Image 1 (cartoon, one colour):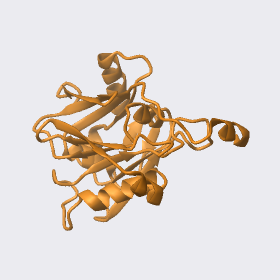
Image 2 (cartoon, rainbow, N blue to C red; image 1 turned 135 degrees about the vertical axis):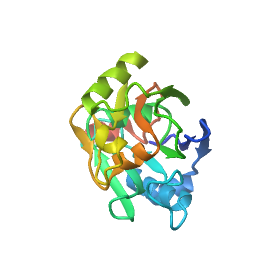
Image 3 (cartoon, rainbow, N blue to C red; image 1 turned 90 degrees about the vertical axis):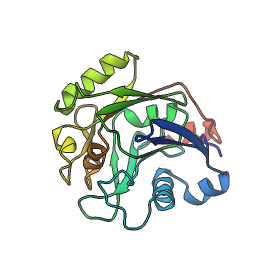
Length: 221
């Protein structure tokens, strides 16, 4: 489908494994954007009664068909999970520079499950995933973490989503942070990441997907 890669990345932190799932046009047509895709993946992959802070909960990052274009509002990414704050479906959104880099990895959504036995951060790029140790980052604030992981990865233009001590300690309303002060601030997304010992995710890549009409987008904006 135009504007999509038709692919979802699955990452199992317990097993340190990842794989790709193809999403057919019929599904994407019925969901349209990142919000619908994230809700669908949460419904499909989360069992009833799952503890929000257990390894069985999932943390989903999703983008839409206009992510990475010059359309107004297309710089936001969506995050989905079962909230440790409310115990229900949760979605949260953040702006900044991360969303286009998620799309540039070659995936429309990234679904993370399981829990690592020790702190780590993920590097996702061009349909590849690397698992980096992060014990040296545990306890650092979000500013320090963002600077350090981007320095370690060393890829110009890479972007990252991180947690701080609140997420590490699974505070029920802890946030995910990017670009220093941008936040996916609803429903405890940072706490879920902390429960998985996931300190940060770094995104970079060069994947693109064609739009239905570049000329029509130019005329619209």
